[in-house]
Length: 301
Image (cartoon, rainbow, N blue to C red; front, side, top):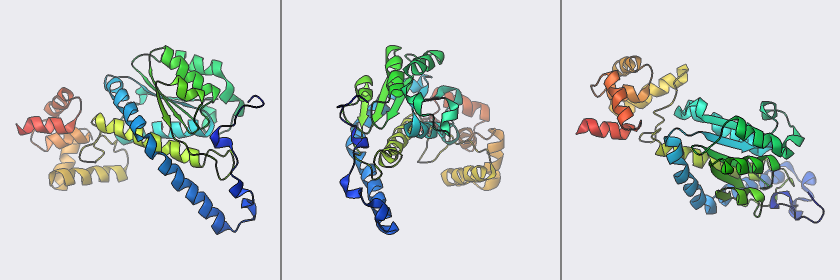
């Protein structure tokens, strides 16, 4: 950062915490907890921007586009976490998820500080993955100025992708570069500059809201239940049975048989329990873009 350049709000020092290291643990924890509450509250004013991002993203993703997360350091890892949870939770296709982390996969667990300045690596990543008009790219940066993240968003926008920027400080180049800017002003941290705290919490909330609402609108939930969940272990298989029991009132034996016929696919099993074959259920879902509520409505006619 050049001398005289104003610090991002997330890097400023709050004089209230100058003696934090001398405080009793409970008092210090109280201050940190208050900061976390403030971070969540700061998301409220950004809800219209998040809604706009969702509405713009759903058509592209519904037509086979990819969802791309780009970031560095804490912000990048938060993006990776949100994205990595979409396939097991909602059965979002793994090959339509791209996680761009400054420094590469090693940076998921190891700090590679200089990587965040590598704009060339960002442009190469966008080109290598062939990011284009069908795709949705979310750049996350607390300061709003991280060179790698900004370069990812700029290159993706030039390639025709929908670009969304999430930042915690106003005036940064990320928000200017993105088609849909999402500003969540979390201000100074209790630990000055430690954006893994307030800024990171707010980023996680924004991404939770964005990705979950996208999945809702794409039909991956039914009556608030994860009907596209991949039941790959005993706990999740039990959950699948409970959900189908709740939705249909059928006994566990019938549900187990339907799940077996459906190859573990909960939506198909739900339709099998309505009296159709697994093949017909699959075709019915395909006609309705995988939205179970619409498929059930056709059956009820």
